[in-house]
Image (cartoon, rainbow, N blue to C red; front, side, top):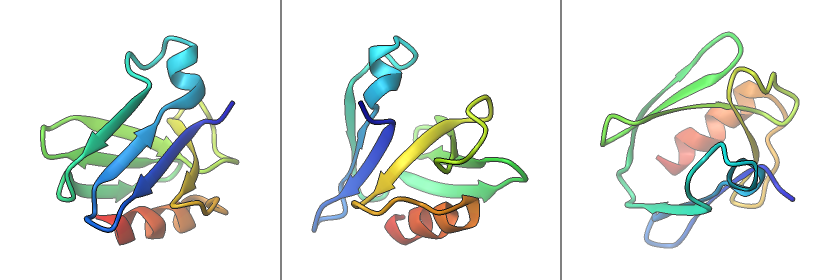
Length: 96
């Protein structure tokens, strides 16, 4: 079972598969799709990334080697596994 997997299509639609977070009951939905402009800003913190959505919803995310108490592990973005927090920040910035 996977952690959080993010993909975008040719129109920029962001799809999130919440994987184990849904199966464990931590997230109430299995998958979600957002319009291309959903992510409005992100902040690289010391130990996680804070992502803001247009609906004022926020997500704390971490790279696969990150501290799971700080956020959701992002297993991949468009099929690529992030190597660290800086790399993950670059990857999500490129899909905004």
